[in-house]
Amino acid sequence: MFRNRISDMEKIYLDYAATTPVDPRVLRFMRPYFADKFGNPGSVHGAGQEAIAAVDLARERVADSLGAEFRQIIFTSSATEANNLVLRGAVKKFRKEFPDRRPKLVVSAIEHESVLETARDLEREGVELAVLPVDKKGIVKIGKLQELLDERTALVSVMYANNEIGTIEPVQEIGKIIADFRKSVRDVKDAQNGKSQRAERSTERSGSTPSTPYPLFHTDAVQAFQYLDCRPEALGADALTISSHKVYGPKGAAALYVKNVGTFKRSNERSDSTLQPIITGGGQEFGLRSGTENVPAIAGFGLAAEIAGKDRAAEAARVSGLRNKFWRELKKMNNQIRLNGVDIIAEPGLRLANNLNIWLPGRPAEETLARLDLAGIRVSAGSACASRAQRASETLKALGYPEKRIKESFRISLGRPTGTRELHQALKIIRKYIAAK
Ligand code: PLP
Image 1 (tube, rainbow, N blue to C red):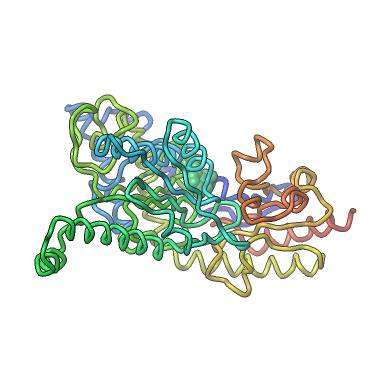
Image 2 (image 1 turned 180 degrees about the vertical axis):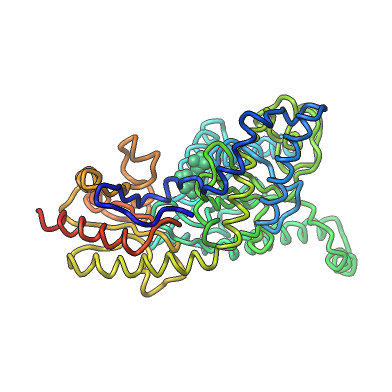
C-alpha cells in the first residue's frame, strides 16, 4: 500500500497529526468523480444521479464508521467549518428558542483554534464564554464542569483527543454529567409544573426525550478518529466532528455528526434541528450546509473513514508500539529530554497512540524544526496552523509550562506509513542533531 522503505535521500515525514497522505485505494476511488462522473448531485438527470449516489455511499460509510444513522451526517469542507457550524449553529438556535436568555458556551482550554477562536468570536457577539481548565497533564478538570452548567448553557465542546499533546479527554464522563444536568433541569421543571412522581417515572420508562436538549455536548474527534472508537452514542455526544485529511482521505471534506438533524427547508423556517445553518442557500445537507457538494472529496472521505474504522485497533497497537520504542531511544540520547502532557509509560491509555510532544531543553523548537527538516525529518511545533503564525502554543500554556519550555517543545506524530526502518533512520539523524550542540 504505502511505501515503507526509504533511501537516504528520502524525507521522513513524522507530522501525521497535521495531515496524512491520501491512501492509494482512496485516490483510485475518487478519480472518476473529477471528470467522467462530474455531475451535480442536485441535478435530476443521470449525471446527477451518479453524483448523488457517490455522496450517499460516502454518507453511509461515515455513518457506519460512527454507528450513526445516514441522516445524522452533515458533510462540510473542513473540520474547521464543522466546528463553526456546531458552535455558531447551536447559539443561533438557542437564541431563537430563548430570545430573553444570554447564551453561554463552555469549551476546554486546549481546544483546536477552530473551536477556541470561534468561541471567542461569539463572545464578542455577546455570548458568555466559560473555559474549562486542564491539569498539568492536559486532562480537563471534570470536577469544574458541573459549576459551569446552567440553563443558559447552549453547548459544551470538549475535544476527544488533543492535536498537540495527544491527551485523551474523559468525554464519556462529560457526556454523563451533561445528561444528568439536563435531567435535573427537567425534574425541577416537572416539580414546578406539579407533575406527580408517578408521571415522571412513566416518562422515564417510556424513554421520551428530556424537555430540554441543552446544553448540547459536542466533541471534536478529528485526531481521535483513527485510533479510538468514536461512536457518539457511546460517548454521549450530541455532535461530533471528524476530518478526511487526518485519516488518509483528501483535503476539502469533513463531517459533523448531529444527533437531531431534524428537517430544515429554508433558513427562515422553524426547524426541529438542534442547529441553525450558518451557510444558507440551496438547502443541501438536510438544509444545514448549503453549497454544491465536493463530490470527489466526499467520495474519498467515505472510503477513508471506512478503512480507518476497520483497521483502528490493529493500527493503534502497531503505532503505539513503535512510538514507545522510539521514545525510549530518544530518552537514552539525552537525559534532560521530557515529554509534555501524559506519561506514556505510566498512563498509556491517556495519550493518543501516535503522539509525542517533546521538550528538548536548550534547543528552541524553531531551530529543531529547521535543522531536522534540512536533515530530512519533518516534524512540527504545536499545531500546523499556529506554527505558521509563529504563536506560542496555547495548549502548552494551559498546562502551566513556562515560556522557555513551550518555545523548546516540538511534536512528532507517527502514521500508517511509518515503519521501523524509517524510525531507525530518524533516530540516527536526531542523535546527530542533539550531539551537535
Ligand atoms: N480539530 C482538531 C483537533 C484538529 O487537529 C484540526 C486540524 O489540525 C482541526 C480541528 C481542523 O481540521 P481541518 O483542517 O479539517 O479544518
